[in-house]
Length: 149
Image 1 (cartoon, helix red, strand yellow):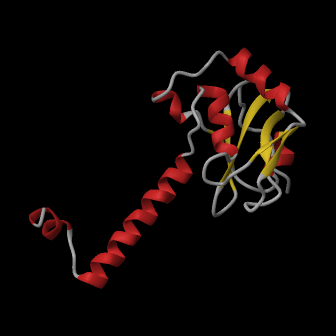
Image 2 (cartoon, rainbow, N blue to C red; image 1 turned 120 degrees about the horizontal axis):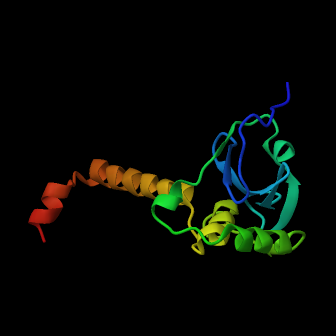
């Protein structure tokens, strides 16, 4: 069964699409359409800006309206960043999963800031895993580190 547009996004809303191990991001521009940065794979250095129907981009995945960074950053005027998003359609842009991904793309447009919460969270998770590994290998812990400085 195809998903329906039972949630009603407003023009300029950020759409987070759960793709399992990562989230894809788009900007809702009205009339059932989104603009998003679509890379063929994580390994590509270029991605295409596309305008497509929200439900075509979502497919069978779950999605939500997510403007949660509004609490931290002031959104730019909707009519300006939606116009800018539409002007970028069919352009090929640089792509990097760590620094220039689809989440960075929508956040630069909405807030003027290149932010990717999912990348930041993954970096923090890796940092903690490395520290845990070092502690296991060398018997170090934060208390010992503080006392030796």
